[in-house]
Length: 388
Image (tube, rainbow, N blue to C red; front, side, top):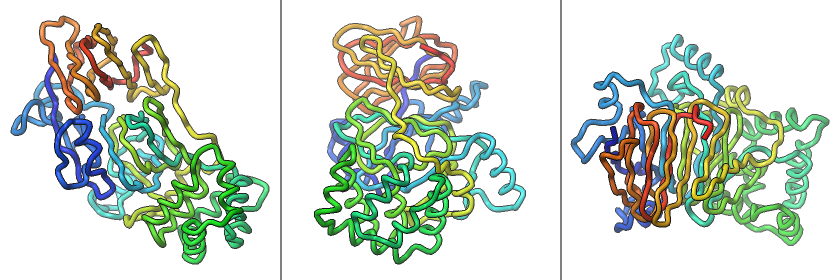
């Protein structure tokens, strides 16, 4: 069976007032539009049909079907999101059980674990540029940038034989008692001298520009210092980043399609007024330096498949130029149109639904293939069991 899905964008403060509206070809609402959720997550379940119809979670329950293992989103950032990290499945189960046993309400601002699931995620850029921070730089590289900025107190902290230990110590210091170094880094980023510009010019992406913007939008926030220690990633259209458990990250700006495991577990590390549990963050975060965690798709003609080796989800991008494409699926799937007017049908092709950008459909678990035709672009989200 195939049914239409709809939902309203969520108005988080960091959201863009134009990106989702432009994609959908409508006038802006005048409010930030940060994320549109396509899934059955109880925080914002999609509607099966027009407004007033049942929500997808209720619809699935009435049919005796299990909740989806994933959540698909359109994400539009005009300002940086919080720096954050997600737990592994084992960490989530242990943390959730401990907080349940403590009696801490699930909606308490101090809550870290709102469910017992992990939350790996991928983001594929739709805009020509999507900026993010992902993973931690090697200490030597960060120290060189800090020295060029002229912040000796932080440079002195970035010394030691083991990068992971050094970075863990610096994160604890900055998030716990780093007001002075936060002010110094913020000031240096707002007025970088020639030495600082030269040091950042050697970076693989325009990280000085990105960090200056982060500092301007978050004055006095220790996350500005944390951001300085992270890899800056600038994605082009169709490029993707994959964020498994333990990887510190933050989206900065741009429009993308995001797919994640169905969870709401977030440990924050800056750029936010929300609760930061420094001790739990440091227990969860992987402080080993790493290259930016880019995810290259497997390409076959008009089909690009982004499939990390996890059971929760896989994402397929299909570009259509007037023909038809079949995408095998391994369970309940959501198809989201992002360009043109693609038509979507299930395996029997008895029902075909034409979509416009921002429109979506749901295919039940008894379908084994998605048939797409026409002109445009669509993303297919499904469980991760199909090797494709």
